[in-house]
Length: 351
Length: 232
Image (cartoon, rainbow over all chains, first blue to last red; front, side):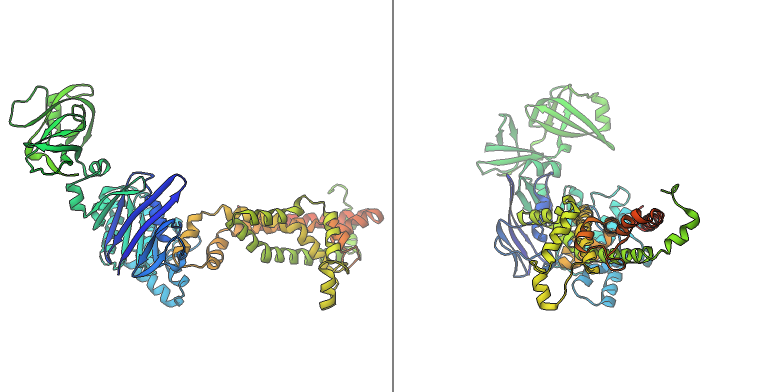
């Protein structure tokens, strides 16, 4: 009882080829940059895109192969997109009841289901009669989620469900979504480019780039050991590909050396360290840090009490320093600085 | 036209034995034509908007032919097809004894022939303007293609369908060439308002003007009704 799929979809020169497995009650988040093929994956699952290879199997039933294609209305799916896509000519309640009615449920039962789904998402009776244009973005998106769930789908597909919302309503809808997903017993596939959505809503992450999965696994593992530059960027870590280690020292592709306290046995490795582990200085440090590199400031950005400094040089990296250090160092783009990282802060793991 | 109207005798002209039956026939046949347009043209427009490929572009081209065809030629074509020895007329006569040419049915058929393409093209445009994602969502909610059409596409394009119907109605009301060729010009039976205007213009120009005035008023009234209700 689960969703198992290998999706091969050809779109001109672009090919999507991914393996997915989602257990009942679980949420898989698919992350990736724009144009990575995330939406194509959802469309293939929903039956809106034809499979050129692979299969989709849900609860031991085959939904699609390149030869057979169950049409969308025969698949037990609920789809929620960035835009609510509510039917403009129907009230909120009619929108939610549309699905059950389409699947042959009697009118009074369908409206009971609709009222219950709306209530579960915190939408009171006063919203029932409203047309979509009379709802706020956040309310409309919750109505759309209620509509997607009213058919009791086995597979719930969420396509950037929070990306079109304004910053004020996003947390409310995210919370409603998280609460609703917690007691949803079907399989959920969430497509997003927002790491916060993925980390708060998903049990499993899959990073997609150029139509392939570059890394997948539980969030805590991915955040600790990224294996792809994009994943590292999302996880907020500096990541480098490195060769074998000799006495704790590894060499990066650029030729720079990096020292780690981690035991390394593999010939091909990833090395990573968090931006907060980097210490910057105007002069060559003579402390205990084993890693010191010279670099040039490319950019300085402020977020709250933290300044994020991007360096280029022997090792390209980002460093998070406090406002106090920034003020002390008087850093500006083009300045030359020394970066140092303790060997104990550098993680190394097989590539 | 308003300046040339003989307002003092307008009442007398309007009760002219030719005028009333012509107006009545025009009203009945154009309403029948619009009803047929709605019943046949709406599903056809829907299919045309949803299907692509060779076959459907041929069907679209075929539907569009009457737009560019001179109506008289259309009338000749209908006469040849539905005439007593025609491709459709002969079997129809043999099977049911129904002979269409020179009957009120022929009037409706002629009007349908010229107005259906206008209706279909207008309504197809309205269907194509729909957000396709809404139709996809309806599908994922379990709606069959027929239900998507009836419950989502049709209600959302009602203004477009109505303006298509108005366009078709106006085209049918003014229809002359195909009607006179295929249905003839028998007062009270196949003589529609435009035919009556043409005939009256030679015998009784004031009656022709009066009749034209009625058609003008009718057209404006329908347009006004639709504007308030559907076209804003």
